[in-house]
Length: 184
Image (cartoon, rainbow, N blue to C red):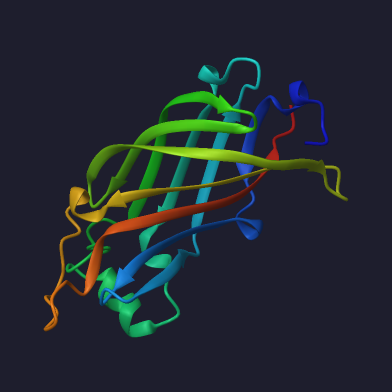
């Protein structure tokens, strides 16, 4: 990291034009299909000296799902998967924040999908910080976790002739975040 660690303490807003929230799921037991959400927002507070005071909130517009295939995206938006008309928002609200080691924070919080909230934990690595050409202090985070989609009622599947299922229950969630420190 290039900035004095203490100066990273403060409130942040996710720069969505330089961030990505993605996912991956095994398809037909042979390959992983990846996608992203194009419309999301996030805010947080980072307390470097006392991480327990830190917090993070992220909201995702579920209909912004993009897997580079319009038919698949339409199916994911349907009642078979996300029921996006009834549940248009996916959210994450942290409940605890701790320093795991080095530049890694362990963030636990409630992930809400289809109106179901479950606790998940994500290790977020601080990938760097810098003052950009416009004078904004930025900090980067990357992390990933795996969830079982059926825990949130996302149950659609189809059996394959050779055995196995069409869509894996385990889904990887992947985060690449650039956050801008808010003015004091």
